[in-house]
Image 1 (cartoon, one colour):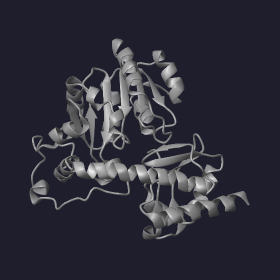
Image 2 (cartoon, rainbow, N blue to C red; image 1 turned 60 degrees about the horizontal axis):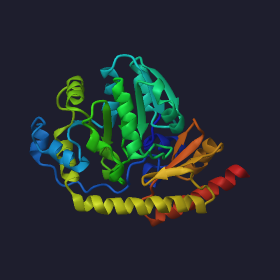
Image 3 (cartoon, rainbow, N blue to C red; image 1 turned 120 degrees about the vertical axis):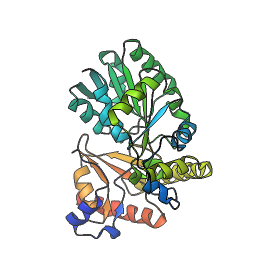
Length: 331
């Protein structure tokens, strides 16, 4: 399995620090979770039903003509490559590594390229996979340019797959409303914006025919009854959505400022995280971890991603931890 953030218990064992003493910044999940209400007993007792209002709430929230609920966007990432014959696939890099891994595992010819090269060389590929905004690189793309790219690919039977797991803070840039165009597939995640990663819920916005094929492959009951209930309620809470977007924007800006003030100014990021390329990334990750702060380290390129601290004290702890770690590794 590929490496991911969020492995707090492993870090606790490795560094001998109890889990409750960590500041876990290793994921891009919002530290501000939607407040889950009591779950009706029927959600646990009965098999999930498709007509419970979840899909309608999701279509309204995402502005998508058609979509499919899946067990996190990861389920779709693994399944989509099996819906095409072997193809030439270009995947953004650096980026969420599960995309390239899934296409390779299904037998496709995969190249990973920086965003500018991938877009410039789109004619060499049958499928292009982008992450918008990119994780961890933070790249953003013009909506009209993406639609033009999709049209070019679709003319020759190609696909444009856009992973919008971190799009909820800037929904105006989403392609979900165009998801019914043949060859355009948009992935959305509930875990990041709503802080509901444990629900393992996401959505695929695509044409009805593509969704039917994906539904057949995944089988029935892709989401549990409790997850369906909670996600439906969260998607309908518009007042909370507005508050969350303001809060994420403010905390994302504060994270950039905190890292810069500590002498480790980030290169890129979005409302959910900040990312720093640095040849000292491995040593920096270790030095910060010894201080009970968990980050996400990347090898290619050598870099570190920082998620959002939840409050003022956590920001102060991060600032002091980064300064102390820099002093240690530069000594």
